[in-house]
Image (cartoon, rainbow, N blue to C red; front, side):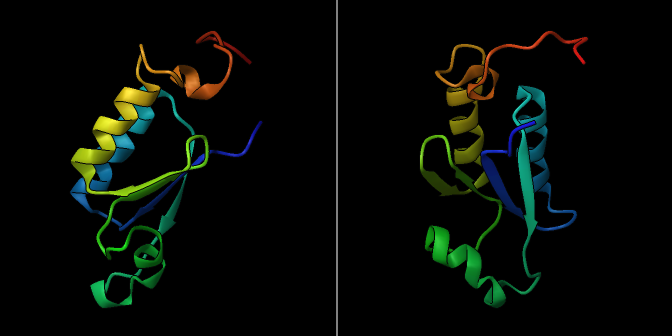
Length: 100
């Protein structure tokens, strides 16, 4: 199994983060979660990536895209990894639902 190409920076129980998690799951896109500091002022790792300290934020190694704001992320994911997107099937060959 390959390494996930998307890293999601998130907080526990954050509804905006959960919205992105739901879309990633619905699209079948593998991702890794990085949980960030609860204190907004301590989120230096996210600020270095996106210029902001807000979550959710993603880094997509397939495209080099880094972005924040859940609505923007959802739109991006659906456009890139959705049924008609250029990276549908997570940029990998399609695998059947009942697969190994």
